[in-house]
Image 1 (cartoon, one colour):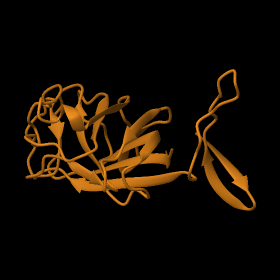
Image 2 (cartoon, one colour):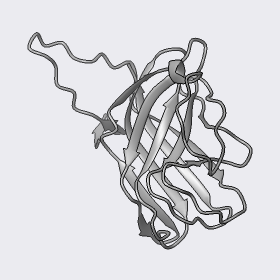
Image 3 (spheres, helix red, strand yellow):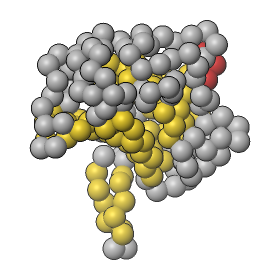
Length: 185
């Protein structure tokens, strides 16, 4: 994603190529962002490969205040940050699974599983490679998320579950920041 300045205002921009007839995606908004910040539980229980990383007692995180209701949004970028000055041994790529309605039956450090009850609200996932250390946070982004999702009728939120790809041992209570850049289509 590139930054572009138009009339002295900065915008995130995405190049979308049209088909042979010249048709292209109709964009109804400038770029937007929704960020979730949470602390994982106060323990250092090791995550196995494909476990869910969630706040204690919750089966999802909520990306709220998306500036539309019941429409499609196109996710262009996924950012992941975790407090800490070094990447935990074994920590690798992460996946963020997205849902149009709240999923059920998941918990921190439990195996991630897409259930039959949740398949109708599952919108797909974005993946980010293993994070790198950047001072007080470890960080990674995926600037080519390229995922179009649909918000449920009457909803202005997306729901997510962060998943490990590799197992690793976390620090107790660390802060996670997950950000999505998107625009309404």
